[in-house]
Amino acid sequence: MAEIVVADAGPLIAFGRLRRIEVLARVFERIGVPRAVFEETQVHPGLPDARTIVSAGAAGLFVVEDSSPDLARLPPDAELGEGEAVAIAFAAERGYGVLIDPQLEFPARAGMNRSRPRNKASVFRVPRVRGDEPP
Image 1 (cartoon, rainbow, N blue to C red):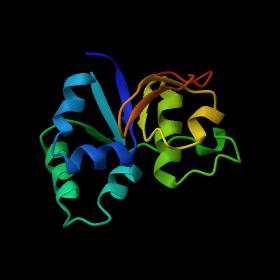
Image 2: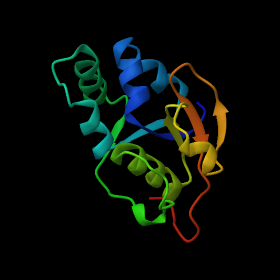
Image 3: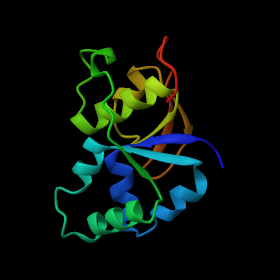
């Protein structure tokens, strides 16, 4: 298995629509989903992708993380939604990759390096925030 990643809502929703979230679980050692990101995937709980995401979480394919990262460390001009900001900050604090929609402009501006191109998801390596220790 490749690595530990923090997922943003876009890739989860895309794989949920395909009903293939288990592919992510086979590729990555561990997938963390911040609570704010999970809630973003459940805005329309009746949709098939939202139900697939709930089932995948219940099956242990990813872990919903309840801790809140320090968003003050993100650049003030990042222009991110809450889910993206939390996912990037969470990954940065722990030195994990972030599974995110590659169409976002922020990863390139923040100096993150894309490691695996995908149709609707890419893993970016987030530089570890100095002074933070993994959980």
